[in-house]
Length: 115
Length: 114
Image (tube, rainbow over all chains, first blue to last red; front, top):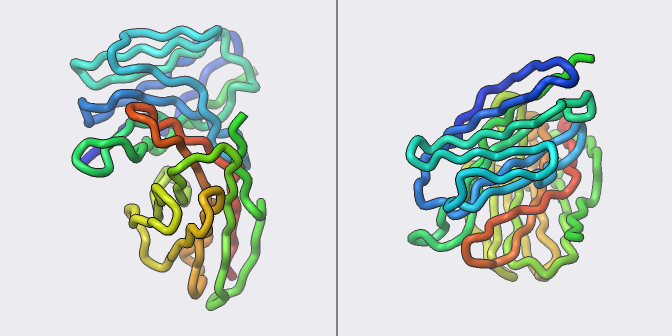
């Protein structure tokens, strides 16, 4: 079945870059997503990448996609204490014979930023 | 901006009680989802709905039911709450659009069953 794997913890110092990695299984996914969850809150869409792209940059965020290896990464430049949160990778999977439907989420990577 | 709201941020119930969790979205989205989130287990899909009065089981539907009488509202029902249903419950909605499954989440309801 579909599965999304990501490491559970990452700790970085303020000002350093953070790289959160994710592997997925469904090669037919059209979009792949990164969500952020701050303590006590719901998930917030951070960014997404279309599957025919290798890279997407949005201010301090860079998403890299390696379709061959089914590997997705999120790089946060100049990480700040406010970036401390849980980051979820998600891939879309079909509901009925490949049509649009659900997202499969990884278990989330808890990013801790030390001052 | 898409807005997804959930009726309660925190809820405390007793074992055996019937519990209703309400979710409302204001963007005319067709799809709505209920997840529970537990430490070390990530998000697990309980039920989803792709249209009014339609529902589909997710990965862990046991002990739950849902209701979607209106497009904007998706209710999760715990028929007889048990302590193992203590969790964070997250509602989400998405537009029915080819190739774009972006889900928008509510703030979550933290449920404690005593």
